[in-house]
Image (tube, rainbow, N blue to C red; front, side, top):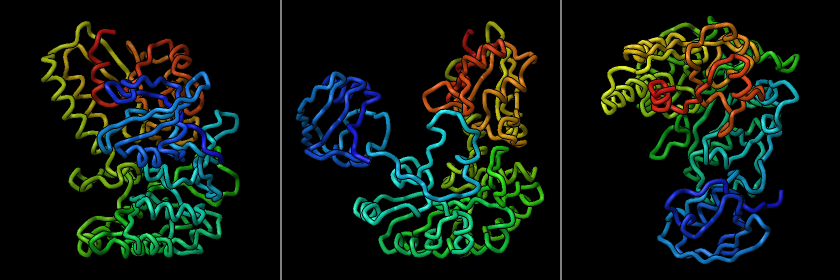
Length: 446
């Protein structure tokens, strides 16, 4: 796709961009004569001390600017998208892909299927390495774009080809060798599909990955083992079966045995189990010190333990700073979460309710919309809230984690808006982004 001007969506306060007079909607066309393809180019080009910018304003007028600044000083601009030349599309046909497990007719952005190394480098999203032309491999090497996050699923060629439905998928070990020779690094993930890449195949995959965790600069930094997620909208005849509690217990035992081996040989757990395995198996989560430096937090490895730790710490600090002993006027609130964290979050609600005048009830929901009995919070939809919470006493309002909504918007995954759901439930909905925001919302006067 042709490179589009980088349209500005935000200007940071007290920044160079604000001082110069940039406006939201302006667009960067070129920097020192080069059109940036993406945010990576933009950051690299803007590191220079002297910048010559071509800017397109909202009226369609071009402007030439020269800026002198400190080396690597940020201009203070954010953009509508990180990619100015479009997504690198995915040409795999993984049966477990969440994009293909959605109903038709929703907003277009829900159906974008990318396999873009730039989003992997910038934001930690996963790619398969099957869709990269030679020039992109060269760019990864030249710009030292590391670490990247790679969906492996299996290292045996025939198994990985079966999963990705792409004959190029079988080259994964050679690709790891390419990274190793260039001293570039990877975080890996393995989505377990029972009957396909579990059992002896999972053991082979983790042992192969561990072979690349050696030397001064290990190529594979970590691996996450994640259960496949299936919705009621998934394609027919997809070969997939859900993860049962019995299967979850088998995988936990298998991986924990390998973890002990990795600790002895590599000095790290290396292969990590996503929290969902323990929730499905109805087993206690590992202790907080198990997770080292949380290398796979983006895959839900240790995210519950980390949230619990941060919650108690934030509550203690917040209440101490506010010198707050009671909430006035008293209020009752409903905190909506996925039922996967029902047991883990019960002590958090009890901690909130120690504050006089505050009564918070937890509403752990499954997702009838997706057909998921054990749901994580981020997958709950507006329809799930309406169906499960209608006719309930929800108190003075709902505390709604922002992870349920489209980024910087008010839409759920089913395209219902917060306003619509609030109207149908006849109760205010307070969107909270993080623990401190939840506390402020809970104690402030409504």
